[in-house]
Image (cartoon, rainbow, N blue to C red; front, side):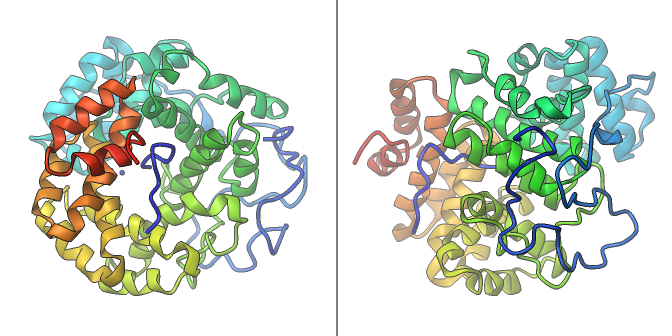
Length: 404
């Protein structure tokens, strides 16, 4: 099993902008040979050569407030996104996120569309602060897989000059406040990936090329997580050209090696979409992917098991048992997902304690990888691990990179 360490956080996710010199697909530079038949709502026809685009895609526009209120929505998802955005724009993100968190526990429509709603809160907050990413980040929270942070960055390229995308991307996440913890830094560069896909009209090669221009390997890899998440699950309901009906693993089996990790860490979301959420078939598909990436596919399986069951420990463990010899990877992925979603170990610890004895060290190791990213210092991470477990403290600390 491959341990990810603190450098790789969970998704719950350019050289001269559109003139990227090397397209990331190993076989075909001009685009997918068979993009499937996902319907007429497809957008973002991939560019086959440099300079095809010279402006932002229309969906990369600013948040536009109106007078829609939460009480007006009666469960309508789009209405709720606008209403919560309005509240953030007029009242600020902190009180809006408090309302959002309360309603997550009482309103099934809010809970069911929580990631898109909190994206909208982030987007509106950026508009409220006139594009100041650091200020908007400082008032955010990790609610619903940190969608608030992603919503900020999906709008951060509005009015950007395509020729400056690489430089802009490097600047956006450089603020000291954002870099205070790996967790916040990850949310920022992951959000860049979402924003790049939206800005370029879902041009996967160009977006990955921009990620490759970030300052560090960690930033580059984390950015690709947002690219692949947006590719699979569009924030705006579109279907990317970089998906295939007859190959749910695509493009992971086609992209260059340096881009495979976060693609495979997202891949089961696509597989489950295409097979009607048949978990047994999904496990079989993971067993058949490129052999060096089977473990990561099952970590994706665990992440989706966590999200799909609303972090129900018993159901997660039942689904992970379908992984056979890769069951530990599934549990590891689920533990990381819960810890990331909660920005803490309270519920993830319950999963680990309920798991079979042989799985517990792996589970607590996964918790440790996220706790380290959430912590501003080694001492804080050690304390977080100690609060999570005594029996498996060494496993948690190893995950946090604080023990051998």
